[in-house]
Length: 128
Image (cartoon, rainbow, N blue to C red; front, side):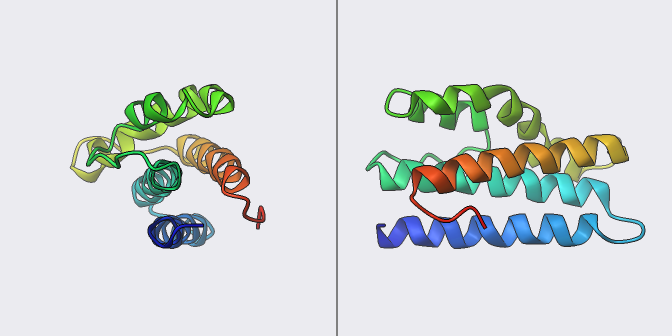
Protein backbone atom coordinates (compact mmCIF):
# COMPACT_ATOMS: atom_id res chain seq x y z
CA UNK A 1 0.00 0.00 0.00
CA UNK A 2 1.21 3.51 -0.80
CA UNK A 3 2.49 5.66 2.05
CA UNK A 4 -0.17 8.34 1.51
CA UNK A 5 -2.90 5.68 1.45
CA UNK A 6 -1.71 4.47 4.84
CA UNK A 7 -2.05 8.00 6.21
CA UNK A 8 -5.65 8.21 5.00
CA UNK A 9 -6.46 4.82 6.51
CA UNK A 10 -4.93 5.84 9.85
CA UNK A 11 -7.07 8.99 9.95
CA UNK A 12 -10.17 7.04 8.93
CA UNK A 13 -9.60 4.49 11.68
CA UNK A 14 -9.27 7.26 14.27
CA UNK A 15 -12.66 8.69 13.28
CA UNK A 16 -14.21 5.22 13.20
CA UNK A 17 -12.87 4.38 16.66
CA UNK A 18 -14.02 7.69 18.14
CA UNK A 19 -17.51 7.22 16.70
CA UNK A 20 -17.83 3.76 18.26
CA UNK A 21 -16.34 4.84 21.59
CA UNK A 22 -18.70 7.81 21.89
CA UNK A 23 -21.69 5.72 20.82
CA UNK A 24 -21.02 3.40 23.76
CA UNK A 25 -21.40 6.15 26.34
CA UNK A 26 -24.46 6.30 28.60
CA UNK A 27 -25.64 9.52 26.93
CA UNK A 28 -23.77 9.54 23.63
CA UNK A 29 -23.33 12.82 21.75
CA UNK A 30 -25.28 11.50 18.77
CA UNK A 31 -24.48 14.40 16.44
CA UNK A 32 -20.76 14.01 17.12
CA UNK A 33 -20.96 10.25 16.53
CA UNK A 34 -22.60 10.83 13.17
CA UNK A 35 -20.02 13.46 12.24
CA UNK A 36 -17.19 11.00 12.91
CA UNK A 37 -19.04 8.31 10.94
CA UNK A 38 -19.13 10.62 7.94
CA UNK A 39 -15.49 11.56 8.41
CA UNK A 40 -14.37 7.93 8.61
CA UNK A 41 -16.28 7.03 5.44
CA UNK A 42 -14.88 10.06 3.62
CA UNK A 43 -11.30 9.24 4.57
CA UNK A 44 -11.66 5.59 3.61
CA UNK A 45 -12.99 6.56 0.18
CA UNK A 46 -10.13 9.03 -0.20
CA UNK A 47 -7.69 6.26 0.74
CA UNK A 48 -9.05 4.22 -2.17
CA UNK A 49 -8.69 7.19 -4.51
CA UNK A 50 -5.10 7.65 -3.36
CA UNK A 51 -4.27 3.97 -3.74
CA UNK A 52 -5.74 3.94 -7.25
CA UNK A 53 -3.65 6.93 -8.30
CA UNK A 54 -6.66 9.21 -8.62
CA UNK A 55 -6.88 12.83 -7.53
CA UNK A 56 -8.17 13.24 -3.97
CA UNK A 57 -10.58 16.19 -4.09
CA UNK A 58 -11.29 18.45 -1.13
CA UNK A 59 -14.94 17.58 -0.71
CA UNK A 60 -17.23 16.15 1.94
CA UNK A 61 -19.65 14.81 -0.70
CA UNK A 62 -19.33 11.05 -0.43
CA UNK A 63 -21.40 10.55 -3.58
CA UNK A 64 -18.85 12.56 -5.55
CA UNK A 65 -16.05 10.36 -4.23
CA UNK A 66 -17.95 7.22 -5.18
CA UNK A 67 -18.53 8.54 -8.70
CA UNK A 68 -14.76 8.87 -9.08
CA UNK A 69 -14.19 5.36 -7.71
CA UNK A 70 -16.94 3.30 -9.34
CA UNK A 71 -15.43 3.06 -12.86
CA UNK A 72 -12.62 0.94 -11.41
CA UNK A 73 -14.61 -0.55 -8.52
CA UNK A 74 -18.13 -1.39 -9.63
CA UNK A 75 -18.92 -3.10 -6.32
CA UNK A 76 -18.68 0.27 -4.59
CA UNK A 77 -21.82 1.44 -6.37
CA UNK A 78 -23.96 -0.50 -3.90
CA UNK A 79 -22.68 1.79 -1.14
CA UNK A 80 -24.14 4.89 -2.75
CA UNK A 81 -27.28 5.08 -0.58
CA UNK A 82 -25.32 4.54 2.62
CA UNK A 83 -22.74 7.14 1.64
CA UNK A 84 -25.47 9.60 0.68
CA UNK A 85 -27.07 9.28 4.09
CA UNK A 86 -23.74 10.06 5.78
CA UNK A 87 -22.87 13.10 3.66
CA UNK A 88 -25.23 15.45 5.47
CA UNK A 89 -23.42 14.84 8.76
CA UNK A 90 -20.24 16.53 7.51
CA UNK A 91 -21.74 19.99 7.91
CA UNK A 92 -25.45 20.15 8.74
CA UNK A 93 -25.27 18.53 12.18
CA UNK A 94 -22.32 20.61 13.34
CA UNK A 95 -24.55 23.64 13.80
CA UNK A 96 -27.54 24.27 16.08
CA UNK A 97 -30.93 23.25 14.81
CA UNK A 98 -30.70 19.60 13.87
CA UNK A 99 -30.48 16.84 16.46
CA UNK A 100 -29.78 13.19 15.72
CA UNK A 101 -31.98 10.49 17.18
CA UNK A 102 -30.60 7.27 18.62
CA UNK A 103 -31.96 5.40 15.61
CA UNK A 104 -30.22 7.78 13.19
CA UNK A 105 -26.97 7.41 15.11
CA UNK A 106 -27.20 3.62 14.97
CA UNK A 107 -27.89 3.74 11.22
CA UNK A 108 -24.83 5.96 10.70
CA UNK A 109 -22.70 3.45 12.60
CA UNK A 110 -23.98 0.58 10.46
CA UNK A 111 -23.38 2.52 7.25
CA UNK A 112 -19.83 3.51 8.14
CA UNK A 113 -19.09 -0.06 9.21
CA UNK A 114 -20.18 -1.34 5.80
CA UNK A 115 -18.21 1.31 3.92
CA UNK A 116 -15.17 0.61 6.10
CA UNK A 117 -15.33 -3.13 5.48
CA UNK A 118 -15.64 -2.69 1.72
CA UNK A 119 -12.76 -0.21 1.58
CA UNK A 120 -10.52 -2.34 3.80
CA UNK A 121 -11.23 -5.32 1.58
CA UNK A 122 -10.30 -3.36 -1.54
CA UNK A 123 -7.09 -2.23 0.18
CA UNK A 124 -6.29 -5.83 1.18
CA UNK A 125 -6.54 -4.98 4.88
CA UNK A 126 -8.02 -7.24 7.53
CA UNK A 127 -11.62 -6.45 8.48
CA UNK A 128 -10.75 -5.69 12.10
